[in-house]
Length: 386
Image (cartoon, rainbow, N blue to C red; front, side, top):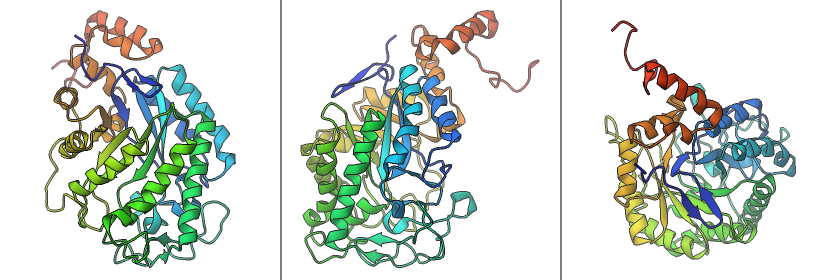
């Protein structure tokens, strides 16, 4: 049986072998913005695991935009060559690979999440060369009660940032990435400009919704002129947030993004304040963000990628079959089970499930299955004699 999840998808000149995407997730293992062996092992695992499109985590266009001192960077040409090894390996295993570009704005300069994610003081040196680490934002409004007040960006600062995004896109292309995603969600710099709570400017970049869209649209327009016409451009949006941004606002934004050449909206939520979009909820429902992907897909008439507590193969398949999204991004579940693709193919009844992963694994796992294990993993029951 051929499922939607394992059917190919063509976006511009890119052919994806399936609809499964590794969601961009920060791993905080960079060294002054540089890749380390960690990243090759981490992303290589998903290339051999059968993922159709792998996204490298949020990579910063400006050292000031790093969320932590351990974020990846693409703000200088020195970063280009090391990415090629990861990209070439992904391609050799039949996977496409993309990169998410971002800037944290007023949410920059924090300790690592497992160290409390506390705002770091002015004494913290910058990521690139121990420079001063300045926080910038659309308005001089701190992101939380514990955060430092950022510098309000001048129009010259805004124009500089647009160029930085374009330069990072050029480097991503030179490295060989297949897809580029612009991070406009989760309370980071582009989202800050979109938000009436974070953006209280009185010039052409603030005030009305159209003015608050301006910086984001100028970034996207500039990036699209640099990013090759045959390569897809994604945009991650907070479809709604906890500080006044609505799904209707997102639809307006996404219609404009489509006009500028964005191909897919990666539909997330929240991140604008200290309070979660699901505050007060014991646990969000499975696929709790999927309705936003469905609404944007329908009303903005653009492809969408669903993300957020998509755990089960049949759940992912139903989202695609119901026309709620075009791609399925899996994050923490792939961290938990790097063989999720094989597991999903098995559960959905795909023919020749071992062809969904490289032959280096498929050959041996097929022999394992024929030895009486069928498709069960070593954890399918609690003890060998039970």
